Every structure is written in C-alpha cells, then in structure tokens.
Image (cartoon, rainbow, N blue to C red):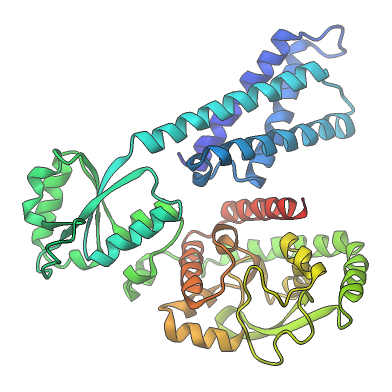
Amino acid sequence: MPPSTWMLADLALLIASVAVGFSLFPPGDEPEPPHVAFWQAAAVFSFAATIASLIFGLYERETVMARSRIATRMLLTTGTAAVLAYAIIHVVMYSVVARKIGATSLLTFLISGSLVRLAAWWAVHSLQRGLVVIGARTLFESFECAQEEGFLREYRLIGCVQPPGAGAEAPSDPDCLGSIFEQVGQLRRADVSDIVVGAGATGDARIMDWIVAAMQQGCRVTNEATFYEKATGQILVDEITPNWFLFADLKTHCDEHATFKRLVDLLLSAVGICLAAPLWPLIALGIKLCDTGPVLYFQDRVGQHGRVFRLYKFRTMRTDAENGKSVWACRDDPRVTLVGRFLRRTRLDELPQLWNVLVGQMSIVGPRPERPDIVQQLRENVPYYAERHLVKPGITGWAQISFRYGASIEDAKRKLQFDLYYLKNMSFELDVMILFRTVGTFLRGAC
C-alpha cells in the first residue's frame, strides 16, 4: 500500500486504541466533558505517532518485508510517540491524560499495528504475483538483482520472453521462455498477473496486438521504467533513453517549487545553525583531542549546473588521509578517527554545510555533491550522471536514505538511479519524508 494509505490505516487504529483506553478506564471528575478529553487525546496521540512513524520509516514498503523490521520500527514508533505525546499534553496543553488510558491506548496500537503489518508481510510472501519480463536477459537480471536487495518481494519472477526480432537465447537458460507469440495462451496457466515490457521491445507494432490479448486475459501490462520506478523508488539507468528526459515531466524547472524550496532552505539552515551552535565547541574539542589538526575540512564539490563550490565539514579523517588525491571513502574506512566515526554515524559532521545552504550553494534535500575529478570519472562511466546536477546538491537526499554508503563506480550508478527518481518526483512532501528519515538515521546512529 502507498504511504498515505498506511497513514490513514494507522490513524484509524490509533483512534480505536484511544477509544479502548477510555472505555476500560473512563475518566472521573474532569474539568472537560469526556468526549472532549477523548478527541483531544486522540488528536495528540495521532499527531505524535504520525511524526514518529515518519522518522522511523513505518510507512515505507521495506517495513513489511521483514518481521524483525516490523517489530523494531513499531517499538521505536510507539515509544517515541509516548514521549512526544506526553510532552505535548503536559508541557504545551497544561493538561493531563490518565497514565492507564495512555498506556492502554499505545499498547493497543502497538499490538494492532504490528498484527496488521504481519498480515501484510504474510500476504507479500504467500500471495506473490507472477511476473514475466518482455525484453533482453539483462533486463530480467536487473529485476533479479533488485529482488535480492529486498525489492519486488511481492512478485514471483517467472522468466523473460523474447520480443519480436530478438536473437535466440541459450537453449539451456531456464529463465528464457521462448518467443512472445508462443506465450499468449500460456499466461493464465502459468499464473501470470503482471507483464513488464522493456524499452527495446516496443519497436514492432505487432507487440501491441499481443499486449491487448494479454490484458484481455487479466494481466496488468507496464513498461519497465514505470514499473521499476514504482516498485523500487529508482529509475533504471540502463533502460532509459534521452527521450525519457523529454517526457518524464521533471520538476527541476518549476519556479514555484524552486522558490518555496529556497525559502524552506533559508529557514531551516538559519534555525539549524542557531540550534547547533552549542554543539560546535564540543565537536571541535573532540576532534582536537583525537587528532591534532584543523577542525573544519573543506573540498571543492560540483553543484547545480556543474558550478564548483567549496563545501565545509567537520574533519573526520586523519590529516594525511588523501595527500591531495581523491580517494573513495568506504563504510569502515581506516582513515576515519574515533571521534570522526561517531560524527559520521550521527551525520553531525555535516553541520557546517548549513552555511552552504544558507548562501545558496546547496539545499537541505538533494543529491550529494561529489568532487570534480570523481564527477569527471563518473560521467565517463555512468550514463546520464551529469543530469543529477540539474538541481542543487543537498545535505541529505533520497539516495542517502535508500542506499548504502557508496564506494565504487557501480555504487555511484545505483545511487544515480535514486537521484533520478528524486528529480522526477521531487516535491515538498517527499522532502519532508526524507528529512524525517534523516532524523531517524541520526537517532539510530547516536544510540
């Protein structure tokens, strides 16, 4: 289900949970009527749980893919919601909700929300939809790779079918199901519910007749770019063409969105600098005690439209980490100091970049900027890599919260797929979700 549907479902569960709390422990002599107290409590708990759910990614597709992830995120969400709700009720509203009512309501939500998601987990793993790919073997392999990484778990990959005019595949390949025209009558028998058509398979007009016949048998037919985007939150770089940028309706040149995004960047960067100011001396002291050298570290990075700017960070590596040569960083980089490891894990090393945001060189949310020499290397090896510079780079972004730490050209290619998704779908709502997930990363890293 989409995040909005999960949000509505959780709101219904929360209201029902608060009703259970009030029915089991009806309030006594209160200054407000019971129905007013009920709706106040329901509103506060719903608000607190929604914020906590966004922070810990409870509405995301990956949550229902693993039972351990369901349990962990439900516990974190409920615990954080309890703290936030009672802070609002006692500190802001100067009111009181009986502890028994609050505890019962949140415990009921924890149990009911977990059961609903466990039912979704069972459905995903037990009622998989049969998927056939029309296109080259490499396209089918990209779907297999995505499934190994945790995507497409709700699908059962049946195999790939040759489009008209395609060369013969190896006869021993069990995933190749033969010619497209041999398969129309077998779709229902093979329990095929979804068909993905590769970009290279649409050149022959005869394929439309086959697609109509497949749809008449109840199959859902989608092109590979649309399917992969919705299923994984990525744009499949190897399967797009220059025409994709003409018809993708990118939001990069929307003046209204750019103006609003800049206003939000100014507000958040100014507030962030003020709130983080007390931390700066402590961070500087930790860096100095761990490794003598400069506290701040700066590099040239490539920004919007290829313009180079100077990016600032708290130094997390030894002073001799690179010696003037750009080197890929990795997750357990031995060049990182003890304090630097903590700063990286909590993202506190990124705080000086709020100045880059304030002066307009970066945005709070966007693709991460890279160094000019690495950008040149990636432009030569990764198709459409330069197009990520259509927007301002960001402190955090869709690729950062969706993919592991990049340390190779292949990783940069995978992160580009998330960046292109952001370019196509960028909106205030998506930026808010990314920010909340970044807060969740900070909280998990600080623990």
